Image (cartoon, rainbow, N blue to C red; front, side):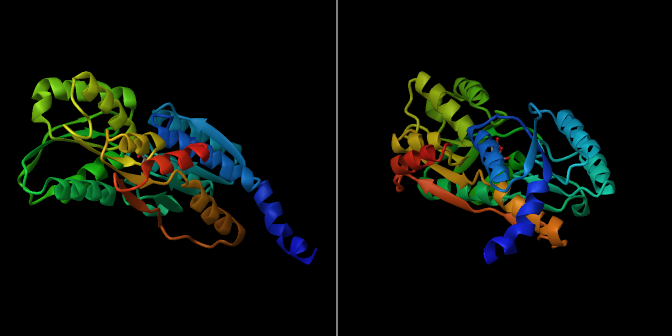
Length: 310
Ligand code: GYE
């Protein structure tokens, strides 16, 4: 009984919180999982989560944030689709005293305009992908094609930069084509088809995709071109969604870097502490990045992630 009484005030506070979440959309399996986890985390804590799907459009995100402000929510979570153009709406939230937490992507805005950002080290992920390919290729010449994420998004900018850093100084590795596939399977496939046509499949040695969904789409294109993904063309991507583990288990993909879909856990921890006692979190709450290759038991990881409802 004593312990129940002791935790009662905190529980009562959390139950009273209303938090708006402006989500980008559902372009990838990873993002769908992030949405699911965010809803679960809010429910677990008794938070009333107002969810808005922006269908990939920044203007819809800005509208949603303005509507959250008008409703007087306690806090706002936003996964910003692109990096620029947020100053005005973030100022409005600040003027209304509503803390904003960025999820999974960063913005080019003054840090005082948001409470904290929960993201992975996006440059590091790209660097790990590049270094993996360097070690895989040794001295062999390798013509690389790159599928970029959504143009102007922080993961597309940072994962490109990191990969270029990772292969720097290894002149046998060259990026010969690089284009956006918008983080989707459908575009990953279409753009890979155009790469195969333009270069000739046998002249492409590796694919670096900024996320797994585009890699999975590209695998389909590679097969349809009569080549073996994972063998004729090495494939490294990012997210570690179940289908990537499955593709690695089947030898059709070679490596992926894990991004946790649970950005909301650390974000809500930080918000609850801030709203309860004014505790300021660090400006950046960094999530882990882990490389998976064919040396891991990808079938088991696939099963495990599927069981988690991914
Ligand atoms: O890797 C990709 C998604 O913003 C870091 O967005 C995130 C990326 C993730 O659609 O799959």
